[in-house]
Image 1 (spheres, rainbow, N blue to C red):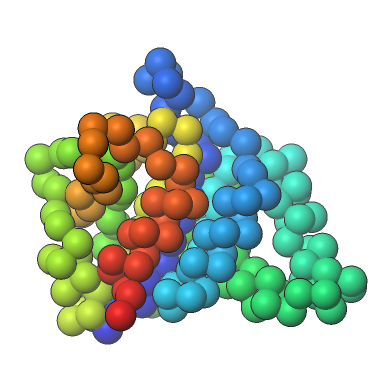
Image 2: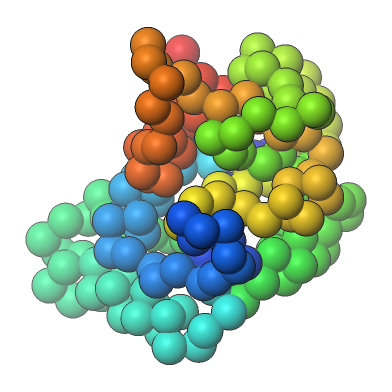
Length: 185
């Protein structure tokens, strides 16, 4: 089984007008995706933001739960945050995985839109369970990953559909659903 990594990209992403922006790191995304990543055996959860001030804020939030009162009050957070790492750009994440694994990760993008090279969950789950290469699952904040990022990925995972037309989940909800579909029992 290949190791599964997750990266949450805050930049470059789209806003609702399809303009390229950077979004702010949120406390809930740090906590909830770290907990989902731990539950589903993700090797590392990367939070990617180009602004040092945003990464410092995330580090401060995580530090509270890793040291002192927060760590004593809720040791489970400390365990979940142990697999979280901050990065300034996606290339840094890919380089780190390459150094650790000795090969480039297979990049899997997620989006609420469908693309030509979209694969279903069963096919991607099979790659995770039966493949040897590391896999990097990408999530975008705002209104999603840039088209160029999507096109640079090896696989695009099919969108999450409910019974209606509306499919604009929070990234932390989408991450939990996707991780359960790919790694749940």
